[in-house]
Structures are given as structure tokens and as C-alpha cells.
Amino acid sequence: RASELAAYGTLLGIGMIALAVIWRIGFGDDTLATWFPRDRWAFQLAVGAAVGPLFSVAAWLVFRRVPSFQQIKTIILRTIDMQTLAPHHAVLFGLVAGIPEEILFRGAVQPAIGWLLTALLFGILHSVTPAYFLYATLASALLSMLASWTGGLWAPIAAHTMIDISMFLLLMRTWRRRQRRAKRQLERERECVQNSVAGWPPAP
Image (tube, rainbow, N blue to C red; front, side, top):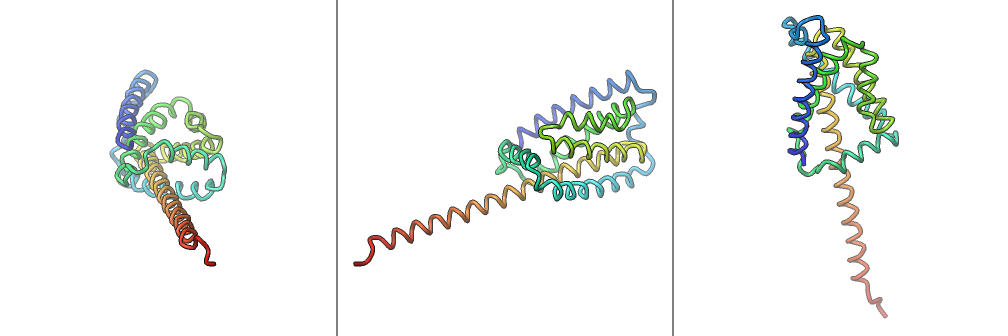
């Protein structure tokens, strides 16, 4: 259920943030305050919030005919109880994933190993299918560039959150369309059966 998924995600997110703080204290050469600079934070949030949906829609259009990408979409639709999923859950999932993952990968890992290795590591950890590995790696590279360009985590967190929100909303739209098609197909089959029964026995 959506509520259970959100609870598990929150616990995992807390663990990632704790790991990032430990990593940064142990291996970082600056303070944790550099993650969230005070200057131009609103502009950086706005940039990330604009970039995220654009990337999501572009990736959805490109990968929608790729079998391995369709496979991960089917897995998600079968795993989550879509009847319990509402738009506010998409927002919650976006925040639960976007904030801790960016603090860990862009805040702690990227300064230590660079943006390219960070993007590849992020892709490997999300490689449920080959297409999803490519998608996650490209998304991570975009987020890494945002972090490097802005010098903080405001923009990548906003972009990551909006990417996940957009993807969940698209998944919800896909599920609802499938439900409507299945309902129409069932109604057509029922109508055919009723017509057959009504016409039996045949007139002498």
C-alpha cells in the first residue's frame, strides 16, 4: 500500500541522511552548511523544479517503447496497490526519495569521487533493468551538474523531487488508462454474451 511504502521510504531516507553526515564529517573538507547555501536558494529551487518535469516527460516519451523500460513500469504497477495511490502520495514519495538521496549522493559522495562516478554508482544501484540503469544514470548526471553549477543541493533536490513526482503521476495516469480499457473490454464482452443469449434459440 502507498502508506506502507511511504513509511519504509522514510526510514530508508533517515538512514541515508545519517550515512551522508557521517561520510561528510569523516571525509569532507568543508562544513555541512555548504549543502544548503543561503544565497539565491529560491532561484536554485525554481531552476530544479523546472528542470525535473522536463527531464521526466522527455525520458517518458523516449523510453515508452523500450521493452526493458516497459518491464520496470509493469513491475511498479504490479507491486504498488495503485488503488491506494493519490496525487499527494506522489508528492510524498518525491520528497522521501529526493531529499535523502541528493544529500547522500550529491552532498557526500560526489565531492569525494566526482560527478561521473557518482552518476554511474547511482545508475548501478537503480539498475533493475538495462533501460532503467540508463535512465537513472542520465538523471544522476543531470543532478550532479546542477549541484556543481549551483554549488549546493537546493537545485538537485528540487529537480530530483519533481522527477519522481512527475513519474509517479505518469504511472498513475497509465494505470487509470489501463483500468478504463479493461472496463470497456469487459463491457463489450458482456454485451456480446447478452446478445448471444438473447438470440438463442434461433428462430425456426
